[in-house]
Length: 179
Length: 132
Image (cartoon, rainbow over all chains, first blue to last red; front, side, top):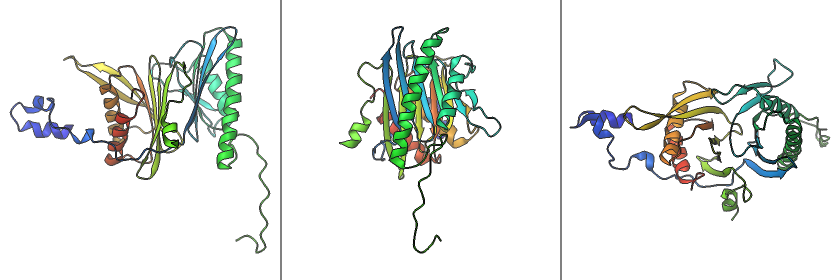
């Protein structure tokens, strides 16, 4: 874009003329990368409790999870990252939305999910205030689904999860000894 | 076809959030594009490394002469990385050109930020998105 401005400097009309629509710039070229099957998996589902309808999203990026739960419609009211650090037993939390501090139930839930999964979790929790039962129902369902997805992921790659103790399979015995 | 099934919308009928997941092989690297469109926000993750990488927040401003531009700010991750800044500015511009004017959270988990890669990302985002 700057180059266009520089070029336009020498022309009648100067930089202002650079804003006029002209020949198609290189930025509008079509992609030459083939479409492939995604490696990320997302699950979207809703449940109905006697109080409210809860909507859930769980996204497995591979090394991190994104989780969204809402009882108040399709909004992204807050976004918190919980990530283990060597300094603390509990994962550290940080808000990822400027101007929205890491308060409310979101950060605490993000911490608990990160500890359970052994992976960083980005969490958006949109629940009405003063509804601890609904909060608990949502969190329990999330943990169920997350553990299921982790198991599926482990099954696909054959690798153990980060946070849960998994018995290592016995090493194969070879006649010649290990090298 | 498998790939088309993967590209199809993942949300069950009636799910209130518009969600699409696409992937491209860019220079042999699988690059996931995960779109989630909420009423008040667009959350877009582009990742090659299994994590969100650098998290960038973009908000729309109006300039004094009536045009709208986006300001971008790194919330988490590498700041003052010219490759990432270029990528985020151009991507946010494409999204704005598609008519989106709500706040955007853009996550870039990339193995590099060459101009060639940025060009491919911009084209992919223009062709396959949550409005297409």
